[in-house]
Each structure stands twice: as structure tokens, then as C-alpha cells.
Length: 354
Image (cartoon, rainbow, N blue to C red; front, side, top):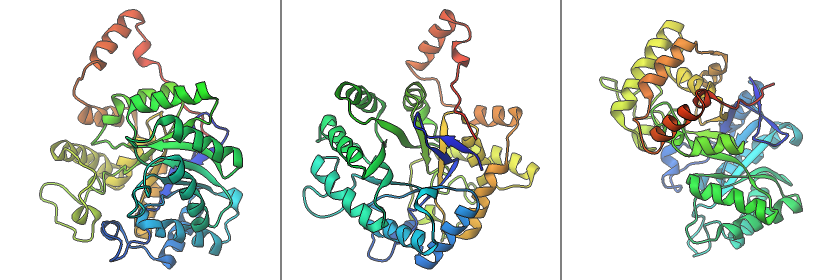
């Protein structure tokens, strides 16, 4: 397991992060029951196994099973006797948590209420990384930044991040935080997979330029890239994709990627899932890949991806089969940069690893 610097902060987190979206779902939890219903005992086993595998980073959210995922995570860490300083806990707020008009969003009111509830459920006195989970079209960015700045000054939150924002809004927030002398977003949590590389259009260049930690969710596209799906594959009724078809993916592109990854996986005697995760781990801008599992064997398989170093030829093959179609203004910028400085397109800032 490698440990990577979290953006420009002084903290280092494992290159794999244990996601908790599969924890706590039940018949009363709506769509969360389709994603996972891992109970306390099984969650304890998963978290213990993750820690033994070198993971020091757990990501959750208040909206996951409406607080149950946070609660189960907090109990597990207590029952396992995990020292607070040995684990980096990230959670998120912004989703719909009730029927009231203010039970969602990134307003000062909702953030201040939500953070105390998350602290209580997690049974901790601070949150290492507090993330705004969704883009709020109503609340001014300044209001959100001021609230998060107050939380960091109070010691309730140590770092702040954002998830699922557009590049323009995130860039504006970074500029405002500097102008306001407020705590800035240090991380971006975004969807990224070999079959869906849209992040590379605007968000990834911004993350690289601003030295944001990039946390990847759904690296297997909701299980679509696990190797269990595709033309001619038998339908697994227990797989998440069979019950919750998310995130959206161009199936034709996905199957091409799966076929290419299967060829490499078979040659290495590893799983398709491991190749999909290894491809992401090889991207210089990626800080940590969030893995969400329901069973120990899935976790063990995902952990095995950290032992795989894809060759330059394998990476080139996968990059080519999954490449985004040319788009404007990227193709013009690349052309102009090449004319201005022949090596500009090859300049990359790689994060240090331990």
C-alpha cells in the first residue's frame, strides 16, 4: 500500500480508501437497500480487514442510509479499538436528510447542524475531511466557504473538500477562499473510471493546476467493470448494477474496455476489477481510489490491485481503447501549446508517495 500526500496538505492517505455506501441499507432505506445492507458485524470485519491491508482512510456521508453508515462506521472503529490518530475519516453533507426545506444543501444553517450530527454518529470529536456532497444552486459560494472556515477554526473539521462540482464553480470557490482568507477546498471527490473519463476534460486539469487531492468514487462504474457484465455474461441478481443502474455509462465503450482489461487480466492471472483499479492508480493526479464492497472476498480482490504495476505497453493499450473523442477547446489548446512549447503537453506534476 502506498500513501500519497493529500493535495497540498501535510497529510498522507492510503491510495485505496474504504467507502461505506454499502453499510446499513435496509428495507426502509429506499435506494440504499439496493446498494448494500452490510450490518454491524460484517462492517467490523470489512473495516478490520481494510486496516490490516494498509488502508488508513475511510469515506462516508450523512446521506448514506440516512446516517446509518456513519453510525456503523463509528461503532466499528470503537469496537476494533482503532486509535483516532491512526485513521483519517472523511464524511460529506449536502444531500436530502429530511422533509424540511432546510434539510439539505450547503447553507450555513444546514452545514452547522449537519456537522454536529455526523460527529455524534461517528463518535469522534473532529472530522479529518468534511466535504460538500453536491452542488447547491441556491446558496452563495461565499456562505458555504465562511461556514466551513468557522468549522476549521473551531477544530471540528481539519480539512474541507467538495464532491460533484463543475470546474467553473470549483475554480470560483478557490479564488474566493483566497480573497476571503478562508479555508479552501483541498480535495475533489469525483466519478472517474476507465470507461468514463469525462473528468479529464475540465476537472482533472483544474485539480492538477491547483494541487487538489483527487478522490475517485465508483472506480468500477457501479460494478459494470468488474468483469461480471458484458455481452453474453450471465446476469448476477445480487450485483449492485442489477438493482441500481448507476452511474450512467456508455455501454459500448465499457464493453470495449472490459474486453481489453480481460485480456491483460488473464495474462496476469488477476481479476478484471484489479486491472480497472490499477489503471486509475497509475494516473499521476489520482490521490486515492474509493472502493465500496459488501463482502470480504471483494475487499481482498480490490486490495490486490495495489500489487499490480501495469507496463507502459499495457497502459498505452488501455489508454487508447478508452480515449475520449476529441473535443473543443481541448484539441485547440493542445495544438496551440505544442506550437508555443513543444513539450508542454507532456508536462505533468506527480504527487510524492511514501
